[in-house]
Length: 335
Length: 68
Image 1 (cartoon, rainbow over the protein chains, first blue to last red):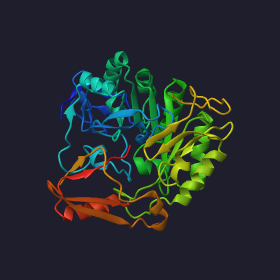
Image 2 (cartoon, rainbow over the protein chains, first blue to last red):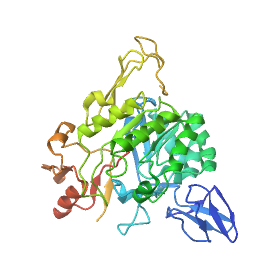
Image 3 (cartoon, rainbow over the protein chains, first blue to last red):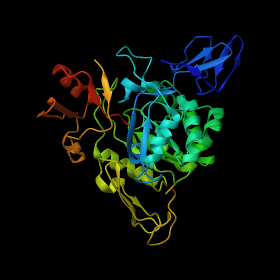
């Protein structure tokens, strides 16, 4: 693992306080934080996240983004680490770096100009995903700086667990972010993730207010987010920020430390869609289990289908400069 | 005993099958001979189940798609 200088820290007596995530670890030199990828250093901090274990190119719909450049490619990088330790994480062999015994985590330093050039050649954005991208804030800023001249944007699939000052630093670098909102009940959210829920909702609001395109994903985790009451509360909270924010409902997969539960049924997902719409959300999506109807975008003005999608792919985009071709209603997004 | 994270793997289980397996016990395997040897592709509604099956067949590392 290669350690490089980190930003977002402040003095805390003889220690340094990490100001990237709300854990706000106070670290002695050499001491690693709760995320396992940032550590105290003489006079500052260091990060292990200027590296990636993958360089995958796939559709931006897989992140998922449904209202950000439909059909575009995303060159996906994954730096080590996560500020959450979710019990159901399908990506745990990658995301839980530093917390699990197992094979060595393999990553290579990121050559930023090379990544940007590769993305530009395919008309792709650069996505940070699979693990927690906010821990790679320094990499994000470097990618955005180099990407600006090449027309390459940077997007995140994030848990949204950032401090306000971290959000301020990173918003100019991000075109879009999909944030997982896994629940609002603090005790249950903390049991599931090891972290508080309130900063996540605050991040959704802050990114949205800063003009970053925001979509939200909610996995229907049994006991945390799958009940109608929990889903109603989550949907209402998103609608309170903006009812145009797309809400992605994710099927729970039994994995990692939650292997006894059953996967989410299609009927539960259909009921969750209805809950989202009843809360006023205009765009509620289920990627696979409900077929095309779960993935397509309908105009909230006339009901016409304006974007058709396959599984993780664009079928057809009928929008005219972001407007419904039938009634002219503007559909929110970065089209 | 590791994982190799890959961009894409074919689906052997389709969304239309979800409602027929509410307890998530469906596992599907495809075994075929290729120029490189024997290829074993697996899909399951519970990832650890297919991982156990592939490990028992001596697969190491296991190719895995990631979420997100």
